[in-house]
Image 1 (tube, rainbow, N blue to C red):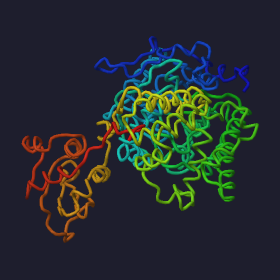
Image 2: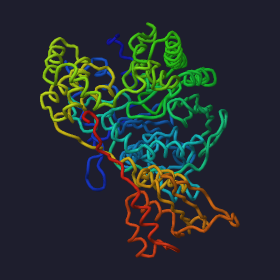
Image 3: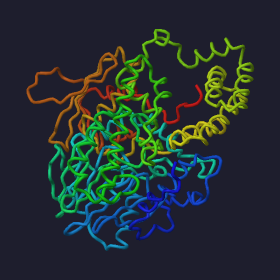
Image 4: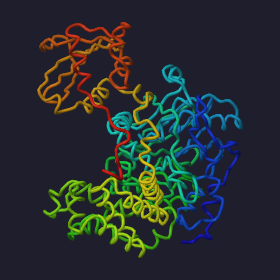
Length: 613
């Protein structure tokens, strides 16, 4: 790779105004929610325990501060995983993507105001439905300003649905795996966490969500916010299920959201998500080039650094387009020749022109796991071989493998020989059998941890490195759980009644509820006395709105309350009995029904095992 090419460093430094000093953000309780200074070691030369290409990427993403990218356009970078962009309008500022946490967003806004004056926030834009692009909303505006129309909130249609689905329905499992993916508890340093490829890591402050007040529904839709004119391009199914790019025609500036960054992105992120569509992604990039890029002097995204100059912009977006198109087409070509995902992942090589570009390297996504994602998207989990149709689950499979290979000690002798020869991929496969067959085998855990570390040190992909090193950390020290809360109160507060009942239904202990039939009506005082019926039968919680004169049978109980009280006591761990005692909840009918319902709910486990059974 051309390490002498410093163009990215020039672009990343361009327009620098000032850094937050120290580069640490604390919460109201004094807890550190962001510490960019902990990465100061990256100013040194690359050690043997890091891939040089990833080290270079981290040296770029660690840059922190306020940058002027064009007159009236500013970015706050290095204060969270993502960037916050600020556009000056006629009377205030429009904020694009307010980071993950209210604390980091507020710190970024304060840094801007320290150098540009105390301008009010007169608009907020969410480019897509991932938490690092909306979680800090209450750090830059208030619910009162939004409700009064002083700060309209724009987002792609479907934003709220997908933001909730990702962070509530599967939030616990995703958050647990995200702790591995971002290396949340790993020590910062040459042998620990050095970045995440897309940014350094995720902040651990307060996550909030303000519902959009204006949906963007179609490509070509124009909106003016505080005198700032924007033309939107819908890109659903690309990097997020609900996402958009937008163009500032009066300034020849293009925002590509997270659809084009300085890395190969994920088609299936390691923390878990819906599989993204590289074919559609490639097509939308072609549309971006033809509609906007050829008329742009500047392109910026929600991560990394901008690019200036029409020719460079078109080439950058064209390489990104070719990258996703090539992965899609070649994976499908090879699967139609009978190869399975794991085989294609080893076979597929990128064209030289794509491989030579720093911006297409797999710092965040990888060719290997993206190819497997494409295979999964089209063909599912089954590779067509009947031998794989009904395999034993991990523990039972491991016991049989270990027995067939002559016992745990014999397996470890083979694994140690592979370790000495540098075949770490074989080591982790072999030792995994021992750990799942005999979870307390200390020698196996130590060897597995060492092999994970070696694989991590050599990885160009930051998320692979963090997964390997996090696995090693837990094998040596035990589970670190989930450092961040998946179902934060700020997210729960944004749920609709339907979404809340959907989330509750996922916690019903099905077998325990097989033979129980309960019907309840929920009357919401703060929503025009709206009545929502919930029926539990056959272990399924079915729910729907009632309307006057619907002729439905009488419920076992009618519960009257507000949406906030409902969310707090049914989803956020509140005490329903106390709420009844305070008069916040009124029950007409059989009170025991409500107690029975609560007894059927299970709680997600934020510390479930990852590298052990």
